[in-house]
Image 1: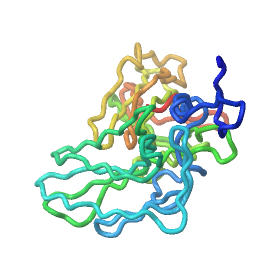
Image 2: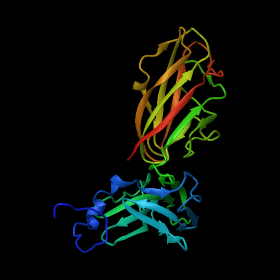
Image 3: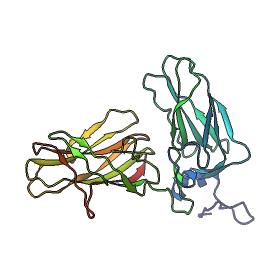
Image 4: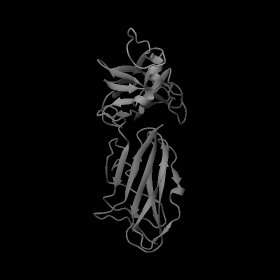
Length: 316
């Protein structure tokens, strides 16, 4: 019989229905993997499948998710796991995932144990289309020397729009409502006091207000503009500065500046749009420079202000 289709229960005269392997072979194309609901990124105790911690005991609460073609729902009582103490002299990072296992025919929470190191890395995900597939939920640091307090709780849940349409996109449009004084001849990060569309809470107006913290492992597209106060002396420039990982060494992208622009008649300088690979907890900021010979402020009017736009392109 040349046609195969599904999934359908087997029926007399209908031998062409897909088997399990055939159904999951194309699972990635039918819908995203993640947790159902609206973003509460960074608040691990909220939303579907929330995380609570008590000493070395972690619990994942009730909720629904989708993992590479398979549905999942936790009902009744939370899933609980006791994290083994880390007897090494350096910390370790563990991870909680939902694992779809085609051989076992299950979707279950699993804790992945990392390797102690001075700068520990998250344990790798297992991702096999015809075997096991891990969807990340949370990660945390297990202290060295048998410590009993987990730290560095990181929310890795990816959110699926409950209204349909796939992932809730990562977007943020940040603005200045207060000017920034830019010293002469020094690259200065631009802080933002307000914004739109930041449903993943990647920007804080009180903690590192110059930065957008990326909630997932993503390729992001950034663009922006800095408005300078009127002054015809010297040059003006804008560039990007980012850390690819949490606590990582910041990297300046000089080629996004191009030639420094002479100040004659220039009030606004755009930041060249750029794509960056940034992992969950890494960040991006926009920096400006002026060399007028003295301090110079950014400029704000009812029609213009310095701004930065962040958009997700794809998950890693």
